[in-house]
Length: 299
Image (cartoon, rainbow, N blue to C red; front, side, top):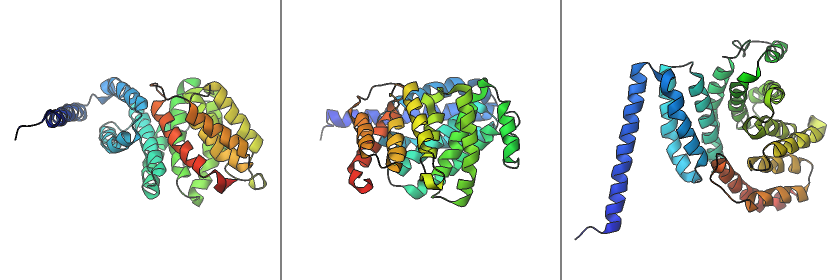
């Protein structure tokens, strides 16, 4: 029987995918064996990162993530102190853990988040005064953070992000809870250095952290609301995970059904545009739908 045009098209796409994958693998092998990863990592990762950030097919991202993670692991074996690679790996493992969790694969998310933490802590340990982060007392870390300049805000934020991702998915394990005050301290320093970094990401973390427990047990509802509102102002309400986190933590903590409904409805009504926030905003919309469907369970 003659081959149908649609079948030919599918076969051609598969062939092209194989060719592209082969080229990528050749490039990666050359990088790993040439010893020049530090010279080409940024030009290679920057367009790839931008492409992933603009992707709105979350299933495609989740399916393709393991390959990217393996590549990053391999590059870091060759060049373990490369800051660009550590930042990329921390972001990638953190994002993958989040998508796994939201798709219901909770145990896998917890396991994957361990790599986000490990790479994040390695990133933090490169900063001045934090080389012995795990063994230094709290007061020593607080003093060291004062001396970290604004130019280091990227590694500082993403290092704390990777660590916080792990803590979030450990189901209240004592070791994770014990680390949270230190992560909080780092995020507070990020706010001091550049509060707008990554759409006000440090404010989002602090807002969620202060709303993570009732006021009688140490929660800080007013501080939480202040941080969320500041993040919304900084990202002009365009980074939709802000509203989702605000609803999921603060609104539920203070039993404000109207705010919860308002924030999540706002997320669903905002158009999805092809920007660097596209993949995050697509995830936010998916989360908002689930949270709205359970509104009567919470209020």
